[in-house]
Image (cartoon, helix red, strand yellow):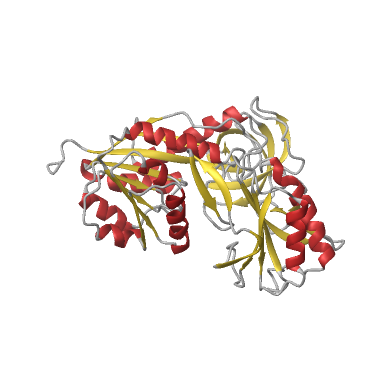
Length: 460
């Protein structure tokens, strides 16, 4: 095999045949893999090789020789620069096919599952204008103006936005105008390289059903002169805005929010309706960014479980009770486990607001609480962060042997890994997987996997 055209800086002709789980197009050249952003299967193109390894390379699109039938013009003028979306140039129906394939490939490659029923991807009506929450880093332009937006792909260079097609369009006026107010106030913008300046991020949130909004500034310290008056002005200018808060993050970190949030004007939460229940959601609360798809996935879970009212269910990593509280209406008792005490406080409030009394919440590490459960639940619902379940969670579940497990995942590679461990030696059987599109126009896919305790298990 020759290496003549396998050098950094070389330009090669390539056909894209697949998409990887980070959203890049995948092609093969001289039997080696080349990853190219902003491409679509079916594209034929010239690619400049940038980062060359013995078995693969990363390339840059130089010239599109023949466009894929699945390629389209992005709806956003900075889609080719902004790192917020990877797939605005791809037909949405094809995005859904690619996401389903991503789940199937992870289950086969990492989990060793073959011929598992993976449903078509669950999607709500809109592929744009769906995000109920956005957090924009702030910066200063070359001409000294305040900017807000997302970083250029693969860099920390800010792409300034005055509107964003994937966020709820009702938030657009705030994005454009609040930057001007920050500029008029003369507040300094945080510089991550020097760890100086005050304002780090602008956070916006909206209740899709109620229209109530929150505005949050993430600051390095609390000393923001004139912020109280400005907060009152924002409340008066934007009638849907119900609360303005400051969150302090004084650390050198990529994390957006710090541990403390102070409400300056209005109330410290917005109200939202989800699955027929009333929820209070704060600026730093975890809540799925696509409300309607989250409801659709909940309906699939409810249908699959077909709860009869006598079951005891454990919701691990329960957050503010987004799934706990709707499911509580269908079981005898439900126990929510959550590490973050602030989330549990909100979950308790949300339970009280909805007069739900058959719920118990416990604060602490899921792996420790599970080990000390005094009952064997009929159903365990897992909804861990991207890293997946801790080893001890898997071990404890294999010892507890609940009849059914539902695993909701935001990263299919860790889902496949954990499912393999749960199903080891035939203890559990994976019956089906339901992918869901919580992030249209990106490569991100979520999934719910349904496990049953195998009939051949002697303790079953």
